[in-house]
Amino acid sequence: MGAVVGTLTMQTKQRRPSRDRADDDLDMTMVSHRPEGLDKLEAQTNFSKRELQVLYRGFKNECPSGVVNEETFKQIYSQFFPHGDASTYAHFLFNAFDSAHTGSIKFEDFVTALSILLRGSVTEKLQWTFNLYDINRDGYINKEEMTDIVRAIYDMMGKYTYPVLKNDAPKQHVDAFFQKMDKNRDGVVTLDEFIFSCQEDENIMRSLQLFENVI
Image (cartoon, rainbow, N blue to C red; front, side):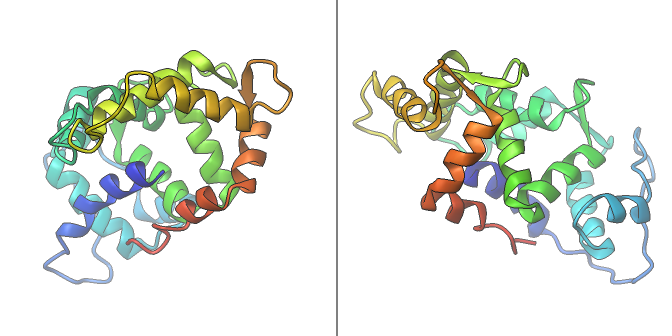
């Protein structure tokens, strides 16, 4: 959760708007996609109009066209992990943001997901994370999917972060995950099992609160 939220919000905080007009709306000149109006986005998310303005300026600065394709998303995300390979994890993350399967992320997709991760309820945050791990979107997390996610995270963090990482570390991590999460031992983790197990874990609950006031 921390890797997801922290990297996605750092750039939007870097540049505060130089102008400060309360009624300033989204500046949408020369973009190929026009976002929904501020009032509608404010109603659909947990962000204020001013916060949406700040987020949009950061988004447009990185993506002047108003949309982000997967390759651009990977390039942006990889900047935060210079010692590792973030491409595979960024691919999974991109698919979670691209909930409509359009092959691109619009500003609406970005702020909707960010609203859940930063300001959503515990259940909403865990549901979003579950969907990230459920790669084939069949409603379950199996060991193959979890192995792909864990390997992607290890690749992203890089050898400098894990200088003594053993080759079987991903398998051990996945086995521990299923030992904890797979309550009925049927080889898959359901959404209910995932939420229940996470709510039992104090470390996971603390991590969900780390970025609540990041913007």
